Image (cartoon, rainbow, N blue to C red):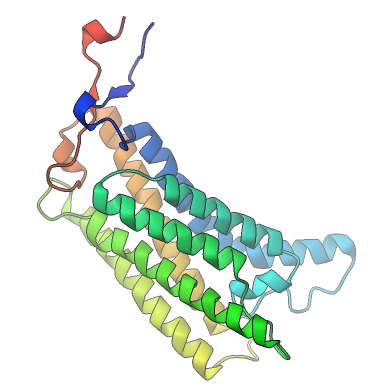
Length: 250
């Protein structure tokens, strides 16, 4: 029985640690959701209206969360649930495990607790909407933490430009989150075809999507090149994944 290029984790550190291929897949899944979801929501509304012969007016929701009340509700909820599953399943380091589990829980919370509808909303809908906002804010903060502290490590041999890109992504997420809060509170651009709130959410979502996709490609390149483990930032004392010994490949 051969294992080809699969990796083997030391027996004393095997529990709770994933191989690099699985970590790469999960990172890529999170990244692709972040990159594809913002344009998919308005495009899906427009395409559905065109196919059904309906008016395309208002196909761009006021916010990403507002798509819950449009034709792309299932796309929005399904993408967030998938994001939550990827994050909860993600295992890399003890700290990252806790962060990803929390972020995955928040993602599912955003999906299951819809934002309050515009206009007349019941007391229950407003209460659920508050939970939605809290979950969404915490989700973006946790994803920013990955960019700021997990994917970059000045003490590793990671190229400086890569670390700077992760830093920029984390800062953009937090800045866009603050701008979205300001836009939502002031209602600025409420009559614009594309509202500032959606653009801020788009920026934050693309930032974490690009960071997680980049982290996936970085890990994949590291695995193919067989370079030292210090290229990929890991917590001190974290379990490493080593290639199978020749005698173990039989």
